[in-house]
Image (cartoon, rainbow, N blue to C red; front, side):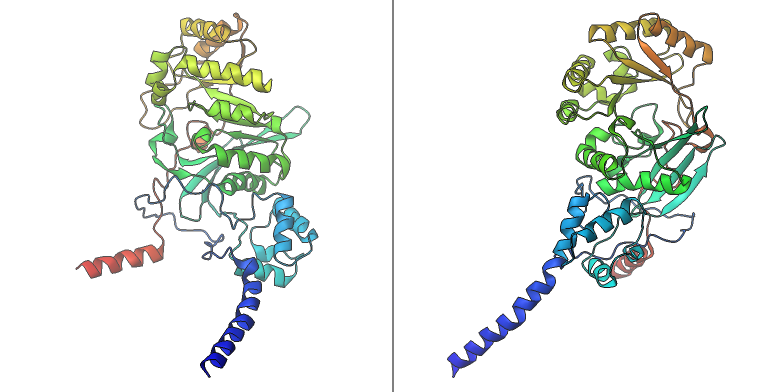
Length: 426
């Protein structure tokens, strides 16, 4: 009798478990529901201390944005669909710029429901706040799923023929840990790295606002890209292959993180590497860029020379001009000597300082800026002077400071839990 009962139990387990395994095969990615991507929150914000770790994974395994067409085809097959459904997903995400899975009107309702049930989401965040400058530059605050805010900037430039170049200045981290003395972003603190879709979505958000294709991308927003290199490279691949922005139209900026320029060179990208130099000697650079103490000027210049040898791509040097600090003609000559010592073909991009609240630095006058540029040009150094954009919208480089938040927002559920904790403690 016991043997017969055991046999029936075994058969029952087989009958129930096998179909259940089949039914859940495509739902092994289940996660909690994502935050809503609609609605405009109040601007009277309460903030709490940051809790998320900067070691968060660089890819959310249930986010569609950032996946290649091949990956999306595989996903479709995993859900029992034909592979061409993956191509449709790719078109809806990157061309139609759908924000919710239910917006996938070309896909069967059952497939959409399966994706949602399994915890998948597109990975688009709502625009929390927008500021438009007189020159047309637009700064966006995007509200991430963990309620942190990041900034991205759209910079339109119309040429003589009337065609527009639209540059997206994107962030790679929430805040920045390097705290360069002249930079507003570092003064706001640091929370975590951005995941790849959180970088990519910034470009799509700019396209949505301008109703125009982004032509150029610069990783010069909040954060140090080289401290989040995995996400940056994944986002770079997607922007190039899926969003279809040419590699030569993408610039990756860094203040210098040991060993990362070598890693970047190994990928042999055709994008521009922009190194934030800001000083012609180590002593002054350490004063302006505290992190320079761990990455001596000679070491960073050697890595830049090796980068050129590896990629055949010219390195551009960013140089923020600070009145009375690093803007003298003598310092320009010293900079030229440094560049000639380490190679040829370098380019210097001069950036007159954008005043920020609470900073002791000042913007040099036009005569000083011209004299500095002239001193470099007379020594065969290619020079450009960056045009200041979006100054009245606090959107110019060095002005990416979050006036709304320096730590995560408290959502209602968090507030209720906090109040409950206090009640229990009392």
